[in-house]
Structures are given as C-alpha cells and as structure tokens.
Length: 432
Image (tube, one colour):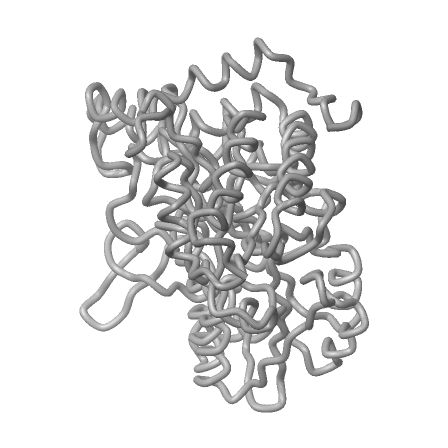
C-alpha cells in the first residue's frame, strides 16, 4: 500500500476502541477465527450503546406514545419525539418533517401510494400538485434497489404514467448523457444517493438541476450513504429522502421519510386507523396534521431509542472522518481484488466517487459457492442479486458477491477478504 492509502483519520487506538464497542465482533465463525464482517450494506452491526438503549427502554420506560398522562407514557412519548429531533439534527432537517416508518422501503411506498391516492382525487385541491396520470413521466435510474423501482412501476401501472430511467456507463456510474429522459412531462425523479451494488456515488447536482428545470419532485434514497458520509438535507435541493435505521448502526424495524413541510401537507394519508385522526364520525374522519397523520397504529419506540443512540454514536466519531477512513479501506480492497485472476469488479475500479461497497463476479464460479468458500475462512460477504436485478443484467451477470465496509472494518478485515477470495480459484482448481 502507498503512504497515502495508510492515512486514515482514525488512529490505531481509535480503531480498536470502535471494534470493542461491537459485541458481535467477539463471535468466531465456522472456521474458528473471528468473523470478518463485510456485509454492512445488507445490515450494519450494532454498538453496545444501541443494544443498551433499546433494552433500557423496555426495562424502564415501556408504554404507548401519545396515549396517556402517566409517567411511563410521558417518558415513552419523550423518547419517541427526541428521536425525531435527533434524526432531524443528524440530517440537517426539521423535526416536523420526519415521518417514522418501519423501514426505507415503506417510506418510498408511502410516497408512491400517497401520490396514487392524490391521483384518484383524495386530499382535495391541496393534493392536486401530486396528481399524476397518462402523459406524465416518472424517472429513476438503472442503478436502483428494487425498493426504489417497483413502487414507481406500480404507480405508473395504476395511473397510466410512463416510467423512464437514466442509464449507466460501462463501469456502472450514472451516464449523464441520458439526462435527456428528464423531460417537461417528468413529474418525479427518484434516485439512489449511492448504488448498493457498485458503490458509485450518484452525480446528484446534475440530476437535481435537470429535475428542477422541469419542476419535478426529487426523491433521494440514502440507504447506502447516510451511515458512510455526511448527508445534509439543508444543503441539497431535494423534496424527499428516505432513511433506514438498520443500515445506520440502529435496530431493524424502523425507518424514516423526510419531506419538505409543504409536501407533507399536500400528501393524503395512506395507512389509517388509530393515532392519526383528529376526529371521527361513522361516515368520515378528520386527520391530524403531518407528520402524525402518516403514523397510524403503535410505533417502534424501542427501536427509535436505539436509532437515536446510533446517531449519537456516528456523530461522536464524525461523519467526515468516517467517510475518509472508509475511503482508505475501499482503495485497499479494490487494489487487492484487482490482483486476483478471473475476478471482475462490478463498478468503478477506484475509490474516487464511490464508497466501500464492492461487488464482484468470479469467472466460472457461482456466487453462492464463492460465499461458502469465504465463509469457511470466516469472512462474511453477501451473495445474490442484492435486490438489484436490472443492474446485474446490465453487467451481464445473474448475481454477484459483495463486500461492504462499516465503521468497525479494519485493515485486517480487508486483507482477510482478499485472501479468502484468492482461495476461491485455488479451491475450484483454477476456475476460469
């Protein structure tokens, strides 16, 4: 490695401190060695403070939110709303623009379904700007996770709108020469901040500018960026963004939608029932203002408590420092993999404009076999199509393996990944 690549902003003591914070790193794998966990894009591991915060809620403050005046109810409600403030602060937004969902997939579906309701006349004149129909266009990219593709396919099917997409360059980056698909008929542009397959960072400034020129709504999927780099909503000219707790060191079962206040006020509710109404008769209901009108039913308060602790943990280390640290490790991983015969990296070959998500295909070896060989070396990587089949089709493969970094990843994890991948060819007799 070159001198530049060894310049992580975290010193050795800090890296060791971080790793001690993650209890799961004490686990050993099937081969008897500590597990090198390189699957953070699928789900991040949790520091002890997150695990403790969730357990602490159940031990000391468990109660339904906004439904009582007793001590536990007040504490639970405070934790619930404090979490909203914490996420808003982390992303540079306002707390009344945060809607709790069960995950980022639900957040995207909430938007798509609400636009569908508006298109059927729900929400009255206030929702008219969200209506979409025949002759209108929704634009995505070929790099999308299925969660940011299929809901828009479904909305087009229900409304008669057309789906179009930005295409890719040969190394999997968004091809700016295809921005022409964003036409005057475009009502909405939904795209990923970072690809969950190639790790490529989208050219957000160019896409946002093209969308703004035609007055389209802009939706950003931050699932692969918000735990790895600073994401400041106030600095981005977008309308909505979705977030996933379990990608950000937090618990599973909770996500969030951020949307501009004026957009939330336009949106008809999707999920209805308790906790989101101001009044009800036997024939009609009056809904609470946003964000409460989108939070029907019981909420994952313990998970929100854990996510709040995760946000504090990430902030404590500094997102800019974390981004720089992972950039060093990403280049180390890319260089290591590039030296292995018959292994193809899907995506940019340099750490420039990408994060530590590296997918690869081994010629002549099925990804599941690759994953099993690496697991035998106690290296955990993802196998499959990563919920991005159109992107894999673009690369001419059905599926791949993926190594993805997190805050607790160190040089040894990266080197063990490279060594385990190199052993695949030897195991299969020089597969080609």
